[in-house]
Image (cartoon, rainbow, N blue to C red; front, side, top):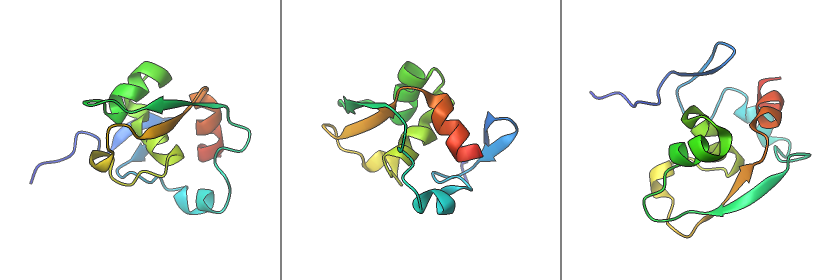
Length: 100
């Protein structure tokens, strides 16, 4: 069985994430993850992927899961071109909120 290239990607400070939802997802469902976080909109073009957007906007393709989490995406291959995604301006603020 083939493994996803994203499974067990080391993200930050020794935390590993093997799914689209990180271990704090249950807690984050109870609060608005975007409270106090500045975002901008990006309209997904044909051929764009979350890891590519993370590399461009967040500085590291391994932060694809941040974009997925902020936009409540559970399966990235199902995102249609033309979908407007929210991208956080400061990934550190999101990470601090998630990893606290």
